Length: 277
Image (cartoon, rainbow, N blue to C red; front, side, top):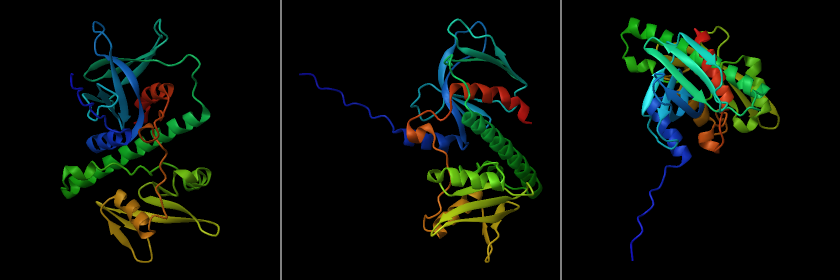
């Protein structure tokens, strides 16, 4: 009797997400299958693709923890939407300094961007624009202070949103299950602020100023606290309240098993990216 080969266990979705996050150190905005070719004479090849920051990461398999190729689209000069093919797949061409890249993805004919999807799309565009501005500012500071290059590579915490004070309040009140702590830009656009919604006897809102001091961050409390990163700032609030404060994070497919954003939204996101500088 032949012995059955032991089945190889596949990593859990959460573990895959965590490993990709560790490797890329960039926020995940959209993901889905993309057909890619670099030349008109080539055949399309299908990849599971993630848009993180301004990078496209291509995976040979949806469950692969490491990417096989990556593409920086921050230098994108244009993105042209071309006529759908016979299968109805959306196609567009990215023009980069290194050449042309043609992408194809399947979009159901009845799919349209709902108001919530449009809001989310513009939200992540604003978030990415702010992240890039911060990195540029940090790079300038690092050059002035001769800081190590690694100091500019720290991603913004997942609970950061490029929203106003009022928008942060509305987000916390509307979706308390997502968390009760939001990191956002400060009113002067140079520093940051923490907005929290305590729910004790009654809802109680508080705002804390977070001042950028070179490569550190100072929390404006009765006893000022200085921390090395924005993630440490968020962690400080969580630990000091013994977990009563939780970062506001919108669930993604890696944690919930459902797609975080539609293919139509992915297409729109790629077409809008050239306008962000």
